[in-house]
Length: 484
Image (cartoon, rainbow, N blue to C red; front, side):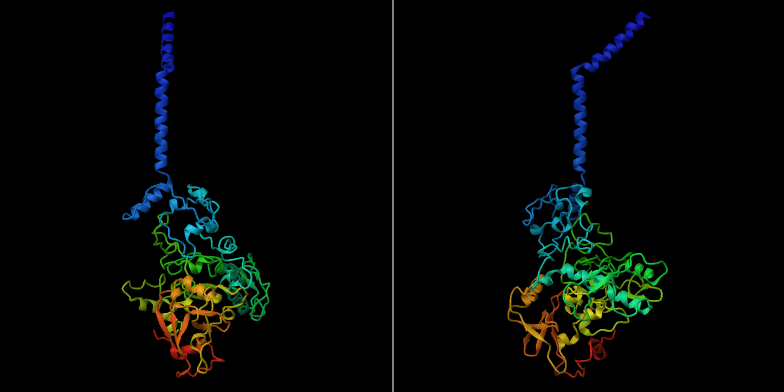
């Protein structure tokens, strides 16, 4: 027993000698440090920001970039932002919002020095859309951006104007349906998607205020059916609930100024955005050169059935019909896509884009509240073409910094007009910079999207027999409608 015990003690002593031997601990520590270093190196080499840059390089093999952290220091803040480390290759949002001046965070929010996606994006405004109307006042509407101006520059308060516009309130659509079904006694708008009010002087047909449409109406009532429609994406507060081809768009300012392709696919260079995932704009860019196809992601898509309170999509385009032939000439495609089959239109209404006729104050609102689209619209055919009895109203560009000149510069066609040019003016005195007089009785118009120049014929001296005082643009279709 003693001998065995002594042998056991000798074995334990040998183990203790091994463990307490200095070189053994050094070996263990070195091995641990090696594996820890290996883990750090592996983790560092597999950080998401490195993978995004590697993906960018694989997509842009001709112009690869080093895999390193990038800092953008906008002159407006002087504070570094690391967003472009992951979003390498992303497009500048617009010429009037250069990244080197504004950066990313002033609009998007977020944590500028974080490289972890969750931390970096945790405090972003509006998710990936800082122009969503819920947050637009904090992003786009900051003082000296698109908000905070007093007269005579109040027209620059774009966010406030949009919030009161018919595209945001949907006041006309709500009032029309409720009046038709006896839910209100007159067609005058009472409700909007949100409550809005106008503290300035109100002139008919402008409204003082709109109440918010009931968020939780009694089940089975007309208002309950309407709330389902309103939540489906028929106004600027929302995007389509289930977007399909020809229907992809953003909400808020992005609904118009952030162009989407009909298939909803991204075609830019930011590797973090999937190329095969519908629901993204064509590129990370804002524009005032808005093509008709962008407007048509809301408009000309079909009609609401008032009996069922459901939307019936037009049957000549996907997803109801087959896709148009890829070999179809652009003019033929445009003739089909622009207006739904029941629509009537003149040649200029299909050759030009919507923004070539509808002004910013019509589309974005003028700061007042209107109860219908008809009340908000004031541009007619005679605005540009005049009447048989009179030429169109004009005005002279007097200052390089007046609104018309600023609009031309932002649109990318500053060369089209100059101080001293005579341009078309609306009945409200709003100057239409894209239509100018180049000789007596001769006007030309530049397409704000394509840059193409068109002659603008005048009604005076033609065979037109319209009564310009009583007849609206609808009457022009009697003689000038395009036959498809």
